[in-house]
Image (cartoon, rainbow, N blue to C red; front, side, top):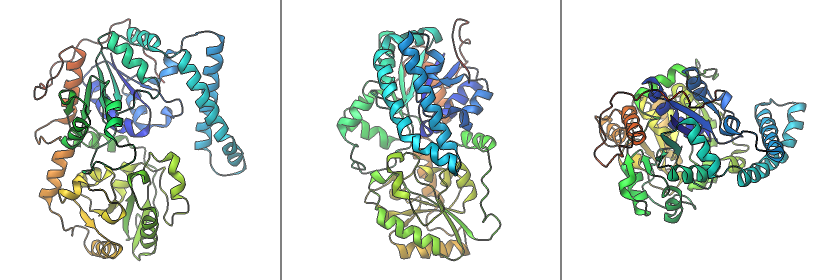
Length: 451
């Protein structure tokens, strides 16, 4: 059994394609969510995997065997608080919704305290070892997560004791070419984050170089490209999108524009961003919307009262499909837009960072608000009239999606890497083999749980 552990929307974006590929080729896989607050039942990718026959469940529901009265009370508290949180997030406006939202902070705090106590007492490496034994796990896969979060530390200790390889898979695409992008981006933080995993997979050479510079052993960092943005998954993802996004401007003749800024902690000038949003809102013949970055919960207030429709609930893939033009700051969603051959405007003036797509000339770099107005006016007349060439875009896609190898079959490479690890054939740099025959199915004693 190959175990994949998830926690948030973003890491599922990058892990789901790999699980799908393995399942399609008859490898035994299972997905367990470590985060009790995340609603796995409303995640279209996880439900797709479930429908394909992949076991998908909350980790603590699947393996929380009875450990006594106190444990049962704490687990029930976590579940009830989690259910209340999901109900609050899914509730529409109205009097009942407002009353429920008042309970949100209390439920969140109570669940956090209950989870930390339960984790400290019960969710140790002995518990993690029992899960590895029950499932017959041959390899365990996480995203790029700090070992101190959730129960990662327990599984890393258990897997090391049992000689089960641990992998850290990408939960994003690293595109910044300057090191100091946010306060936590230090060598010490990166070393603590990655050093305990047996193998670290990254999408591009840029990320590998940064991790190696931080002290992570270079011989355990492998560049395999981007599973999320590879053509095979983009095609499959279009087929499973739930739909339902009904923008009023679909038939209006206006230029459809989506602004997707990076996280505020990455040095975005918030005042300039608001000014830019006002310009977009006032431009004639333009229908503009904004989708803030999905990892901004603590800074969500930054986008209060923004003068553009906030389409946070809409899936990024649906927005990229709908839009005529993507406006980007530092988000990897630029990759999706370029793969779809959509024009991309890069608002260089909103931050002081430098980016790979900027340096490769794979976008329309905008230096001020006047240039933004001019660019949108030009695109209204001709949506194909961009000042960057196909060769520049191809170079960017090669580096980011293919990991620098134009001949790479990305999902097959991920598959073979994980299979080799599970078989004890530890990969070496430059020696990743072509895909081979699947191993036998999981043993009949393996235990899994399905939503």
